[in-house]
Image (cartoon, rainbow, N blue to C red; front, side):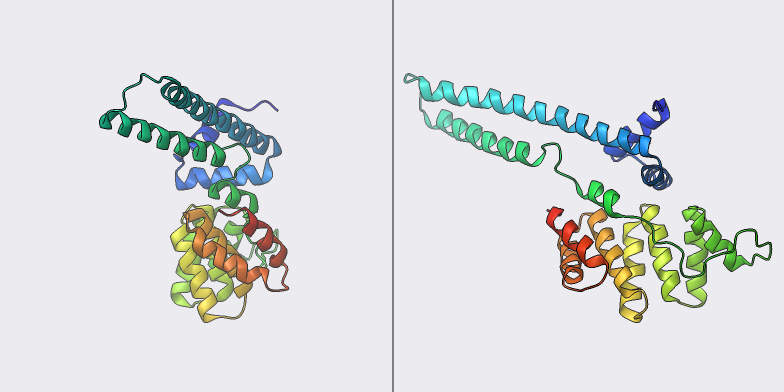
Length: 247
C-alpha cells in the first residue's frame, strides 16, 4: 500500500523530534502493527542517514583538500596566526571523521533502539471479558489499556493507585506513560514498583531500562541491562542483546 502524505509527514516529524505525546503514541502503535508503515520508517531512516553522511563527507573532503594544499605548498606562510588556524582546521577534520563514523546508516539511536525493543506489557493483571456488559469504572480502565487508549488508561490507573497502590497497576501505568512519551513519569512508576513489591519487579526493571534509554540516560540503562543479563529470566537474552547496542 502506497504511503499517504499524512504518513510521510508523521515520519518526518518523528525524525525531527517534533511529535506531540499523542502523536508519538500513535506513531509507536503504527510501527508495532502496520508493516507497511514500519517499512516506510526504515526507508526514511536510511535516506536521512545518507543525506547527513554525505554532508559530513563533503565537508570532510573540503577540509582535507585544504590540509593537503597547505602541506604541499612550501611557500605557504607559517606565521603564528596562520599556523594556529591550520591546527584548528586539522582538529575539525578529526571531529568530522568521528562524526561520520558514528552517524553511518545502521548506527541506531536511543529512540530507534527503544522503538525496536519496547512492546507494551499485555494486560495480564486483570484481563477484561469481551462482550461483558457489566463494566465497572475499574474494568473500563483496563479495557482502555487493551484498546490502546493510553491517555484514558493512564488517567484511570493514576486515580486507582492514589486510592490503593498495586504492583500490577503500577506496571501498566508505567507502560501507558511510556506510550505517551512521558519517560520520567514512567521511571517513577517502575522505581516505586521495584522498591515496594516483589511482584512484577523483573518486568519493571526491563521497562525501566527502556525508559532510561528513551530519555537518554544510557548509564542507568546499561546498569539495569547488565543486572538483567546476569539472571536466568526470560528478559536475560534480550537484555544482553540490547546492551551490546547501547552506546
